[in-house]
Image 1 (tube, one colour):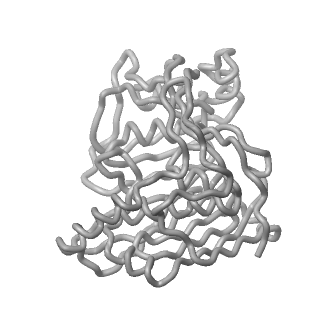
Image 2: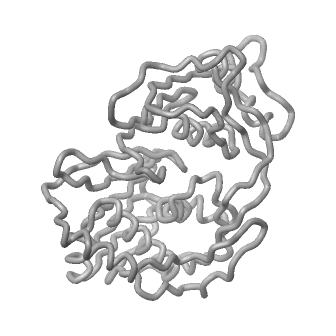
Length: 330
């Protein structure tokens, strides 16, 4: 079971919750491949106007991304393996070791937006890519098999200058800078080369069913994603978008919110785990489970939420891994 409490910024990206003058720090935990939960610890610091101006200027200086950008149907040239973009702060020391003892299935990433420290426990390279690029697992393509199966412990620290710089950033800017630092680390130690491109792929559109939506009570604040075997509960500032991303993990395709419904709702869904999702992914239908079992996830979405998944094709921005190497330990 995964529990999470976080929020999304205006751009729809995952960002720490704010409370008054406190800035949140991150503790991200993954229970199993691809599933995530977050909890925050807050510290007492207020961002002054001068610090905000400094942060904006520093962001311009450090605004290069590590991977090439691509338009529809094509890709830009990728950086050299092991290279990091100029101007991006880097970790001064990074210890990377394979984790061969942890059989718990729990995976953790600890990262504050206001310092130069990054720690990961029992995580795969693919999890690191997902975190660093803010890309859902279903939209990360390619890469050797070990990127999913081999687990690592990572402890990376920056020097005092970077620490001081990051201490003056707000949480959203600090998170973005930390992501760039981890992308640089992936390039240097994992020899990661990747690019973004847009592909025409099978997707699901999340739409209102014939009888109309059956949504829970409107929530006033906070974000929660609580998932387990054949069940999920979603609450958040854009509940439909959150639901679509969680459904994508179950059905194996990108799910695009086409409901046109905005706002916070308490969305609860349960279904009978079977081969229904897999059969739909393979194009063989699967709108209901076998006769002697409960409803499939597709039937449950319609019966419990008044929504449905329509199979379509559409442009999907994906991250393509062109090259990666097993890191040497130190």
